[in-house]
Length: 82
Image 1 (cartoon, rainbow, N blue to C red):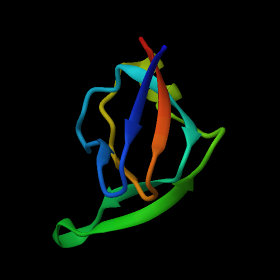
Image 2: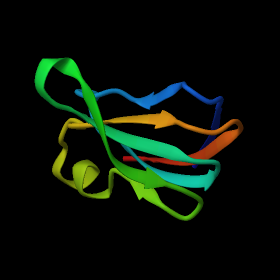
Image 3: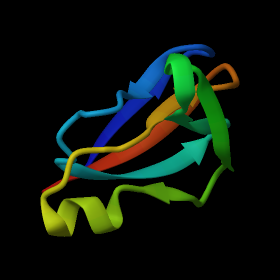
Image 4: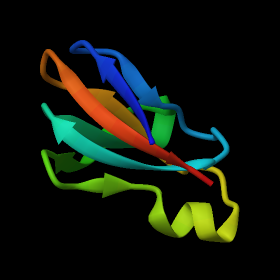
């Protein structure tokens, strides 16, 4: 596993990125956003310690269809590569 840290406002995942790892939230808060009309973003989930991202997408070899943005300072995650 790889530990990574992010500051508030930093994009952790970009819409269209290849899903190549499962991400476990260790600390901080992350918003999951999807693009809607006119390239606006809509928040569809708020993640915190204990949540994970990408489980189904890694298994199926998909691209992310959302973005994940750090919404607090000192966000830490573990990434488990495919």
